[in-house]
Amino acid sequence: MSSAAVPPVVETKIATLAVPVAPGIVSAYLKAHERLIIVVLFFGLLGWGIQKWDNHAAAAADTRATIADAHAATTDKAAAQSLAILQQALAEKNATNQMLAQQNAALAAAITSRQSAVVVQQKTDSSLAPSALATHIAALSGVVPAEVVFDGVNIDLSKNAALAVAQSLEVVPELQANLQDETTIAKNTQTELDGANSLVVTQGTAITALNSARAADAAACDADKKKITAVARKQNMKWFRRGIFVGFFGGLYAHTLGL
Image (cartoon, rainbow, N blue to C red; front, top):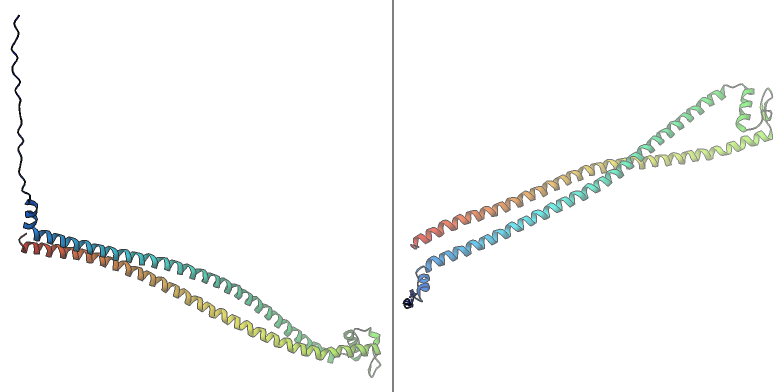
């Protein structure tokens, strides 16, 4: 039995191609494009700084707008509450004044009616017959008719009737004085009432003025908000213009340098 020949093992080596890299190529590239790199870095940093400043200005404007809105809302709410309380108080005061005025008018009408009735009764008394007058005197004095009699010439009063008449007459000066004092009190009260009514009118005018002032403040706050918004837009527009400026002149400068 013959054996087959085994071919010899051939060792294969793969050669690695080494590409030499010059150690100064990076520095040479940077040196060759030094101006371009400087221009790019300069305008890049400039644009970054401008953007940061504009962002800061816009944030500040937004903050002022938020504060203005909050202040306007708080002021408007407080003013509305104060005006509502004042209007309610004035409405209650006005209702009380109207009630008092009606009561005073009713009392004045009653006084006038009583005074007229007294005048009429005095005229009636002057035309009474002596016997009827005696009976009327007894009724006014609160005594029985037998205590006051007409004897054909004179009207005679008993002691009790004379005492009753005297006591009734004692009250007359006091009543007159009281009436005068009450009249003065009524006049003073009416003066106070007129003053209160005038105050109500004045306060109503003040309420109208406060409403106008509140509306003006709201308008002013709205105007401030619009102004702040306009400032923010202006800042954003500045950034847009600056970008155009930087891009245009940066490109022009780089072109001039031959970059």
